[in-house]
Amino acid sequence: MIIEDISAYLNDLNKISRYKVILNEEGGFLTFSNSGRRDSIKSFSLGIKAFIQMLEDINSNISVFQKQPLYDEHTWRDWGNTYFKDPTANSMITVQTRSQISTLNKLIAWANKVPVEKYDEKTIYLDKNFITNTIEELKKLLNLYKPKSENSLKPSKTEILLSEKELKHFAFKSFKILIDKFGSEEIIKKVRENDSKINDTPYAGLKIKPYFGSGNLIGVFDNPQNKQSLSSANTARFFEEDLGLNEYPNAYFTTQWGDVEGEGVLSFNNLQKFISDLSNGVLEAFKNDGQYSLQSRNVSHEILQTIFYGAPGTGKSHKIESILKDIPEKNKERITFHPEFDYSSFVGGYKPSTEEDEIKYKFVPQVFTKIYVAAWKNPQENFYLAIEEINRGNCAEIFGDLFQLLDRNSNYSISPSKELSEHLNRELGEGKGGIEGGKMKLPRNLHILASMNTSDQSLFPMDSAFKRRWAWEYIPINLEEYNEDRSQRNDSFSYIVILDENRSFKWIDFIGKANEHIKRNPNLGSDKCIGNYFIKPNQIQISLEEFINKAIFYLWIDVFKDEEDSIFEQVASRTSYEDFFPIASNGKSNLEKLLEFLKVEVINNTDDSVVAEEKEETSEE
Image 1 (tube, rainbow, N blue to C red):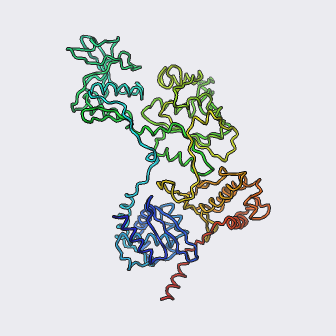
Image 2 (cartoon, rainbow, N blue to C red; image 1 turned 180 degrees about the horizontal axis):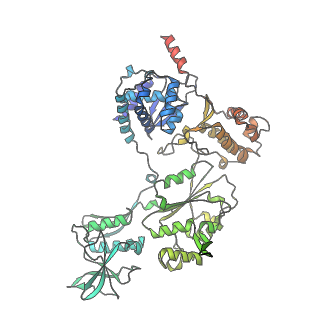
């Protein structure tokens, strides 16, 4: 049991080492601490994957690292900064060199079964075979951690749509469901026509290769047929009910099904594959105890439209991005609302174009119309429209009468403008899905995700009719290392703000203390709080300049500027944002006063003076 083994080994080492390390129960992370010699124990976390990358980097440059088998802070700090490719490990090595390398060394010792009593804190185990063994063992450990994906957090449900004892009836009714869900145009996209006859009556036989290529799946006649005309040799060859294909009137579905194997034959196996491929795995056919069934999987996936809201920097856009990260680019569109954004920017409108020295006006579709058309053309795929900062635009003007289509639980449709109607008829085919009967209706495979910053004083408040057509999800500020169900680590927990080359403080500590003061002010409230990702550094370090230009600027301009109970008054009377400049002198000095008032602890980054420790240990001997 690898988890129990490494946990027990690290626990034994913790009893003899100043630098503690534990394997977290969930998430695949290791948490390690400094020595706490100044009565200030600080903990940091790195993923197993980051340690694997560090070991691979050492292995690739083993001749360099083997020059210094004994720990030397400055050497290892420089090497880590030069060779470590993992961004978090690379940043952390400059502020917590000793504890990070100590953790790495303990992992090497564990993987290579170094007896605890022989473990040497000062010697780094740099044998190439040791490094290779450790990489392999850590990969085994990493495989045991399978964080939940965004989609796995959604409940998965199945629904039985159809159950029949006879294969021919099951096939016929399944095709009716497919036509209803995906449209007849999608069904017959790959058909091949074949001249055929029944009782001397000619008809066009439709085959769909490679699934159904050896027999006629559908018969298309010039005129309506009846039971007698669709039979031969006293056997019904087609079902009497017209399939209802828009492209092929008088189309009748074959009854000639059998449980036989073979490529292209009318069999259950080929039908099963056709259904799965057409529906992109959403629909599944199966046979059990002589009963054929059709089920819909993941019916709860339907996001439809959701607004993610919260304070600035809580991760609303990150939430949307995590949902869309595995979605192909062609299946998603992104737009940001602003006060000048209008209906023509969102849906489309006439714009001039020059053709043969003549100016003509053409309808130019915009983001909504483009994804609306794409969703109707590809009903088996999901499409997503992401709207950033939805409350900064005039939603009533931007959506116009389209907002009524957001009521997905009704069959409500609208009549588009003449120019939009003409465009949709050209793109989708006159009278086809998406413009059927001259009406527009949102397809269920088109989802709309939006973010809303609750601190913004919107110029155009949303009316209640618009609001109630959306699902709302609040994104809270998280001061813990993991999210609520511990399925995902809070990256901002590791962010560090650099005061100077020797001192820093934790971003999570600052926002926690600052937000306490904001929430205590009845004029402000939680909407003005600072979220986890208000500042997003390239790695984990936030520079002093970035902190003052973003965090301090926001706190002054948007939060405390006109408040009597201002945290800036604690720095000096009548302190303003301008007093933080120049940043290197006044900015740092005033920030230090602010941190002292907020009781945010400043970390000394000297790694507990390793040289002093070694001298102390030598004298003790």
